[in-house]
Image (cartoon, rainbow, N blue to C red; front, side, top):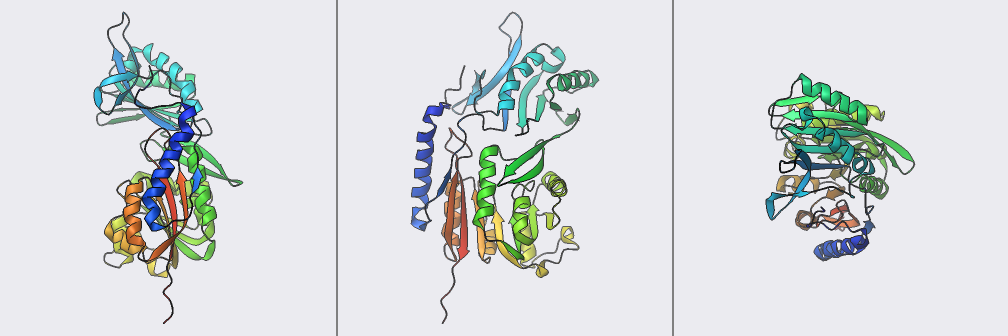
Length: 374
């Protein structure tokens, strides 16, 4: 059975994208941005991560489980998912053999209620199995055999329990503008879900900004260093901040993996970074880093759907150039209305990160308005 609330028909993709582009352009029109660069997604096999409920059908002669999703208006009625064409090729190839193996094992299927995929362009796959029971040695042995059989990595989760069978990350390799970037992507940490669009976003940002190798970059919400590492080649030094401890840990590893040496990753929220730069507070996490010595010309932000708070908006308005990646055009519009008092939009892009949904990713580059000489 397909998911009735989502139309996965590739023949409808262009029309759906046109409608999203029209909506975003009309929303931002009062701010007079330039014509946007439009980056289409592949129509199928674009989603690198996904999660499914595991539903146990007890009405059959031999009880078995299946992948399920739910419609927003009816969250209690499971909809069976036998085919998921938007999933990565690795994901779609694995789905049935993985489910068959789980159904053949009472140890793996017992009280399993959710399954999560994390895949890469290099065909690595990490599976998280989530249970309503505690996991024991018998489960570990069954999961280890499944890992080896399907050439995957498995993590088991239960209440106050996390069992890593071999490792808790996958290795992603992105080819962008003739360069290769390597990323460790950890389970339960944010990664870009659409790898093709992620490559477009990184390429667009790197090509749209001016190289300023005698100036420095500040990045807020840096995650695992997805943008930070490619951008670092255009600047002398980079300060990149992120509140999630696990993301900072993996970002540092990614920096080492790519042999980049001009980035300092610091665990600070956007609000804390603002306080530190305004010299309102001192942080032990900044020990050994002399912020006043940095000559920041550009700030890069990729905030959550809620957008930027007022204090952070005030902070970034002091920068010569702002690069803003947004997953919510509504909060982007609100933030740009405030920033338009000091900056003008000089570049604009729309990235279809989430085909077949209303969600849309946007990118803008703003330059500080020069006051006329008196």
